[in-house]
Image (cartoon, rainbow over all chains, first blue to last red; front, side):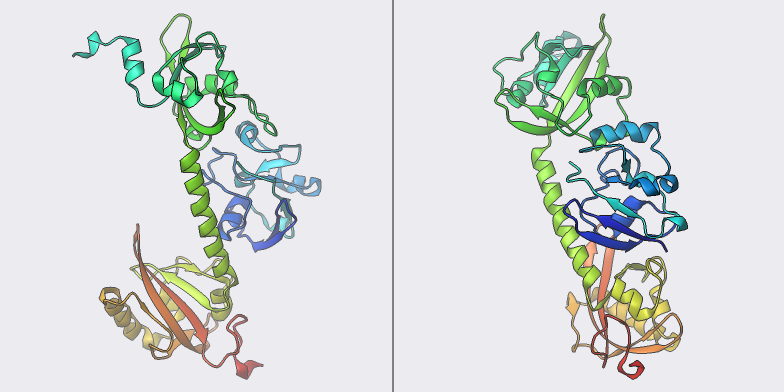
Length: 106
Length: 261
């Protein structure tokens, strides 16, 4: 099971084993990682699971599709590394991946 | 009074939620008394623009007017149940509002925009979520193994200490029967105990009030355990929660017994 490191905006790190086939958002919510809300439950309909994906992992996570791009407009401090974590499905290759959280989701 | 006798403005005025009628450019064409209360205006400022009250926000790329137009065409858009816009009233007070938009059959087209202040709802939700997160994190770091089962004795939650104690991979216990954690010869007896406990008057039985019980690891080793158990009525029915500790082990946190050290 890939180990994902979630980094809060204040630098606090949370290492969580996330099952392959589930989302980065689900991994955070299941382990009560602060900084990711996931209000809509993973339907790409709230913009409260915003994370920053480092450049080096972008080939693994792919790019945001149109709906996700639209919902990112509701997120805080969006930049070119921004993704909605409910749309990133974990694969074995993501072992060791780090995602960073914005200062706030609301 | 029959519906035909009601004028549009009378209907609007009677609506308990704040409602504005706007043009496609956001120009305000009308509104009701509830909107005055929300916007802290004496009279809905006809001729003003809704973006004066739904401003663009710092740190967000969102253009509220673009979304209002989009929602007018898709009044059932799934995000409407979850997202909110920031409303800034005439006094500069900011309040999160949930939005509903309808397209009115006028020429030119206009929109009915309903704004519901969700400040209190959001504060409640954040408090509940923080409390839940704290409780969940305590379970994550608890040295005791915690296992929750539903009325059918299906595991609905096992904390990391439980996974270590019974030697299961992370996340693999939920969905399995509690029976997998109990040696076969004790399963009937344990089931009867749970049935009695379900209807017993006491909410909890603590370690020391129960005899030791036997557990079974994934690789077939038997464990001697102390257990506290409690029952909680949840929306989905009764949930039993047990805190388990290996007898004789200094700590259950790494799942090893003394004889293994």
